[in-house]
Image (cartoon, rainbow, N blue to C red; front, side, top):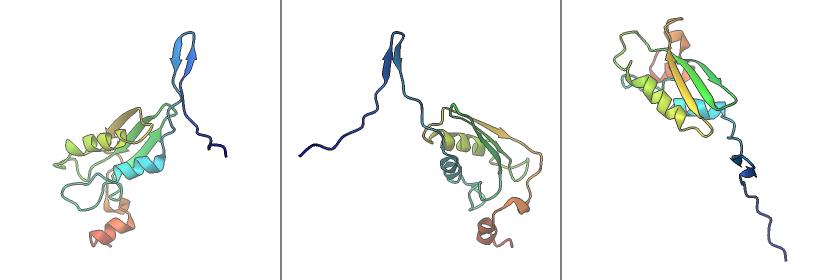
Length: 124
């Protein structure tokens, strides 16, 4: 009886040294799931469902850019939320760098909220 074949990922050696295998592609769903773990402390709904995330760009080299806004320019969590988004996205497999940019145009309004967020907050 033969043993099952095992696959092992190894680096390749060249005259210039070790060449590491390419990093795994960043999965957009995994980035969204990571962002969905971030909550505005005043609102019991994650910031993705609130509609605070305007854009997610994923480059081939694993760099992720997130454009987000806040519910108001005077939001007390203005210093915390972008850092929490950066930390959450950084933990996603394959992410090499994260840039979180807070934008104010277009301004956020309740129409950006998901249906689930509206139901959770009784705003329908």
